[in-house]
Length: 273
Image (cartoon, rainbow, N blue to C red; front, side):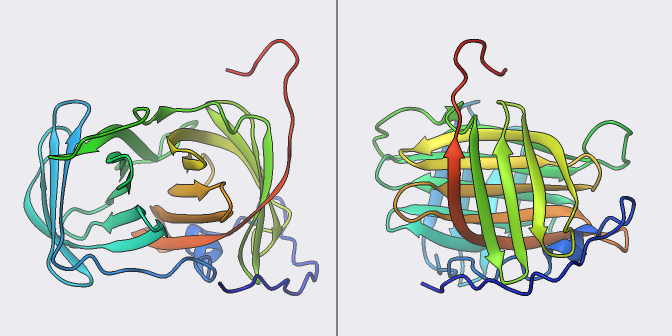
């Protein structure tokens, strides 16, 4: 495992209105990401909770042919893919779609429980004041033809009150505080966003013990992300971004790194939403 390196902590703060674009802050944010794996020759078929199906045939190390019914709706498309073995039996798979602009399909699944979560990220045509431009839909799923066990994946309150630091590269260090089932707060401690932070919309689903899908949708910058936090012994996170870059075009990025828990607070009576 690559050890994190503490980089130069020179004061590189930007002014209040000098926000970095998505492609600026995402550059190099995959430095400490787990390595990619090949799914060549494999077939993955999922039955989604809404009754739709998603089928993927991995043609080689980088290309997948896939189809889907329901709201994702696709008829034998060919796209690139990126896969990571988060654990020996748990996978993070992203399709940064080229067959359809401004969309990504991300799947996390466990071959121990045969359960999965499918996230469909898509960029609205126009930015509307007061809401994120990148939207996300979530679906619990099962591996077709396999016996599922354990709890059905769904929204989780387990991260509420948790405060973590995330080291993605020698130049990327962020702090997250999970406020409720709907929002999280972040600040950049090191990097091109140093001195900036916000409270954005977020979603947390539990896949299995210690494994949490965490997604956020930013208000100020047109970007959203999908992460699988391994809060077990590994303390690693694997993720992707979809957003609008400085040139006004849609862009996909990989991300990942180390998790450093700072602590968790518990509310004594009234709980966050």
